[in-house]
Amino acid sequence: MSKLIFEGKVSSAVNYLDKQATQGGILKMTDDIKTKLESLHPEPAPTEDGFLCKGTPPLPKSVIFEAVTAQSIKKASLDTNGAAGISGGDAEHHRRMLHSFGTASVNLAEAMAAMGRRLCTEYVDPELIEAFVANRLIPLDKGAGGVRPIGIGEIPRRIIGKAIMVVLKGEVAQAAGATQVCAGQEGGIDAAIHAMIELWEKASTDCLLLIDASNAFNRLKRVTALWNIRFLCPPLGIILINLYRRPARLFILGGYELKSQEE
Image 1: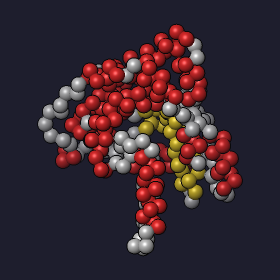
Image 2: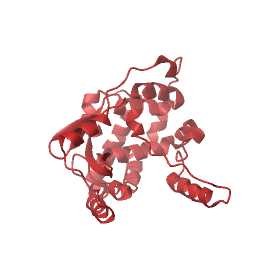
Image 3: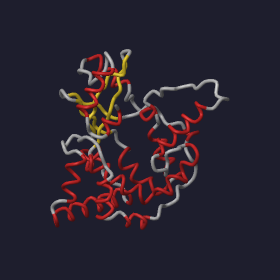
């Protein structure tokens, strides 16, 4: 079901939920649902000094981002799928704009590449990219009274992000190390699934413990993470600060709005 959502097939995902379970689908917004969504995006908590890396963060080599070009933007668009964000343009719409209109498409790709390079090499006023980082929020029925919020960002942000990650793949994999199995590995989640299946089929396996994490992304202390990333993976520091130092706006059908913030 989540695969259908991320591919932009929201209607198919909803139909799947309707067929497979008595509960499911997109929840209608009520005061109770809004309260639950707000609880999943709590106010920031004070930063604890003991979790901060000490010293002066190293300066990243900005020249590496010259590899983010119009061509890499076009290539990234071919690998991008998903539903539309607030603007209403899905992945197929933006692929067409980047590949089907000759010089205009080249100019658009060059502009997106330039924006990606700027986001990676200089600090930008967050008000200037407010629309760029905004998301459409869909509250899905998680069952047992729970809510699963699915945020759908703008396609240009995803395309630019993919082009940047091609440049930084090695640095990210090195920084993540063994703590993140998917970092730098194509189809990493597939490898994790196959590993779990192999583990389950071993005669020595008695049981498996499944844990459903509670919205871990929004429980992360963002200020701490943004400070530490400058030490752990310096090339990623500036763009992550540009994108996450201010809570993004989340728009929900029906005129509701929340902030994507953390504990």
